[in-house]
Length: 307
Image (tube, rainbow, N blue to C red; front, side, top):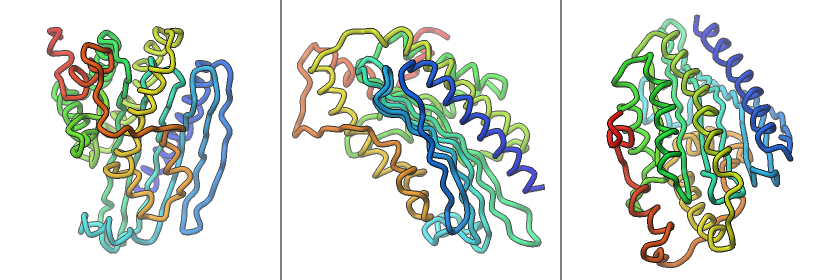
């Protein structure tokens, strides 16, 4: 049964990667994805796809990976003793999009499935993933649209699902050393096996399929907004926070590097340019200051407007 689970998820994720890439190419209108198909000597394969220097995307990646092995690295099995002595499979699609325009948010998503097996024992499995939004010059209506869309994706699975996974996203994408969230959140979930397999799998698909409806209307509304050197400089400064989070906190990055994953694919999420400025302070009353004051902390976005 475990192999049937795995194959079902793998086929969905391969198809999702194809469909997502096609829609992103259509949205960009000026660039195509290049594909790098790879195999992992220890076990596994993947398709890394990168788009760059387009009309919308300065850099973006949509990666499929399927990594497996006879045992987990000691750092992973130490945190989860029930996985010791088990073979494992980890399959997922992750994507990060860094637009040219500072008025378009960077956005990230990931959907994944993990299963570990040992002869004579029931498999251990779970789903994980989520989508989140990192604006530089946020528009309140865009943030509300984003959260409405992800809330509606969660609704068939229970009224408590969106608030719970929204809070988890706020907590997860939090830079403790900066005292700020990475962006305006969305959804994050991991170790999801509290429902039966089919329900968990359906939820993973609902999250993946919510991404384009949540993000593309923001692109359509903001892609032609004018910007100059000031906005680009601030965008690149804030991109530095993306680098800090991914290298210090991100579970997927750490697991990939610890398990001997493909470094080029794992670090695909990094922005093309990032700046660090010593003791930067935004100008009082500026749009940059508005980001810090109103968007880089957890908020009940939909509760504030009575939804």
